[in-house]
Image 1 (tube, one colour):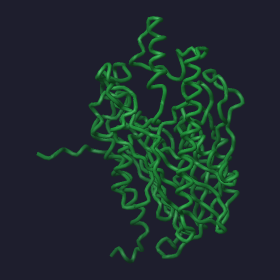
Image 2 (cartoon, helix red, strand yellow):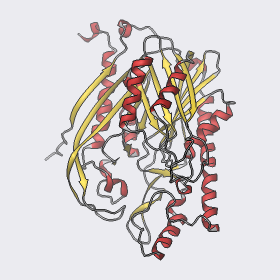
Image 3 (tube, helix red, strand yellow):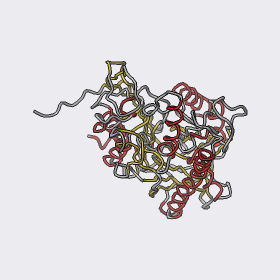
Image 4 (cartoon, helix red, strand yellow):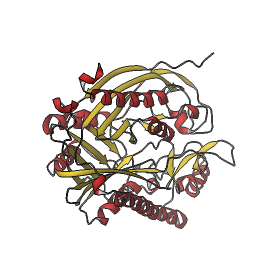
Length: 456
């Protein structure tokens, strides 16, 4: 008997086609592009932060083709919630004329920053729009080895825990979209990579982590004549290759808590709770983590620059279509009824349905797909592999936040990792719903571009 295909319920679909009759014509539409960034470092820090390690920013790119426009937005912050996305997208559509569905907005997901108001994000998009100039767009890919699959079997306990799994699946691709003036002057670069920005979390200091360092490194390399946006790839199960919280700092915290009669070996507290920051060893380890984000940021930034250098101007697009589609998908959810971060089997009851937003933005022959949750790496790899568009990018945590928690691959269920245990997704639904949903959206957009006369 064949495997039963899980039923996926599609709630809504909204396709945004440029409102022009020329969609069916073979006529290129000239691109214009503008970019901006603003400092969103808060004047007053949250109580859990002890200082500022580096400033954080909101960045935006606006692309226009004379008929419609789109915006790419990245904010150095941990999360961008559902209501924030709705507020920004609706205002951008109403006041700037950029369709809400033509917006791809993501946090860099740094665990060391909380910021970015609706007003600030709107203002940076507006500033980017005001800088529009004739432009060309190029696409390329590179590789970076600063990420690693983060779930391993602990050698001491023989249970699942977080650590560098060198043999685990991990996409090393760095996708790069370069925008420059017709004279070759830099405007912006949009780069996508799958890795959690968690290196400086234990320092309890405000920081953009390695994505912020990479953005600033690239901008400094071009004498701040360019705006560099980090786009969060499918990092649900990907960590920085060198991450102290899973090694020495973990052991120190466990011992400190154990001395007070509390076992946290299976429930690691957030941030640097429990660390004696006056201890010379702890202080040295934290200082090394501060250095690590600069190293990782520079390595990632250099690869982005290498890919940019290899884009030949005569192979970059000076015009093309801009179109977008969004879809809400829903499938059965679950609620956990016990606790434990990893290594123990979870118990669950039926919960409310999981609702996720899929987004797809097409800029010429570049497909930027996204989902508003933390997605396992191989789901994005599957999407890119099956996509009929060779230039495909996947953005995690794009356009708001769903109610799923982590979204593991089908094959990951059964592993007692904290992502799987905390996920509200029931096994067998999410992966195909996301991949097939995005592929259907690409088909919708491509079908709409076929002249009506050729469909008969």
